[in-house]
Image 1 (tube, rainbow, N blue to C red):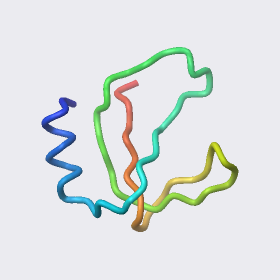
Image 2 (image 1 turned 30 degrees about the horizontal axis):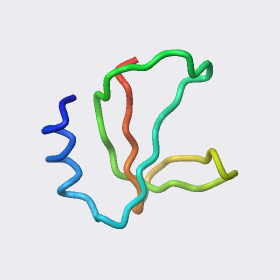
Image 3 (image 1 turned 60 degrees about the horizontal axis):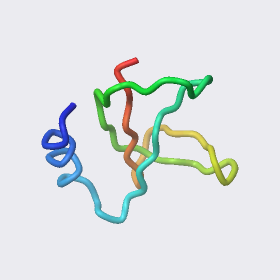
Length: 64
């Protein structure tokens, strides 16, 4: 995904929405963003939580 594609997606979102990131278990590698989806983020701790159906957040998903 390019910055231009991400900007196009984010323009359609509520500017007050939070942005959360999908992470891998190791956290050792980085991967290009393939998709951005809207949903609901439920905070479990200060550094993690659950993402699912709903509103109020945007999740960026890596290719791998």
